[in-house]
Image (cartoon, rainbow, N blue to C red; front, side, top):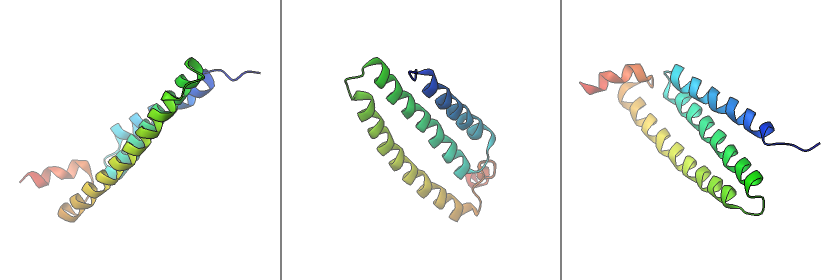
Length: 103
């Protein structure tokens, strides 16, 4: 039995939808960051799958995914640094409570 593209795309779709749901419904910045990373990982799975099935002898999708993972790691480090600074200033990391910092 040959594994087709749908066996990879359905879990990636579920991951992406869970990430979107988590990003929209959560108020905690850490939970929003985790949801964003979940969406990025789902996109990386799609890059690899489409590269594997459309261009089996080439590696562009794999290399693009590696660069996306490296950029996601840097983005996560920067986001955590921002969250730590927000916590130091506001003593809270809920997005709804950050309007206090405008004053």
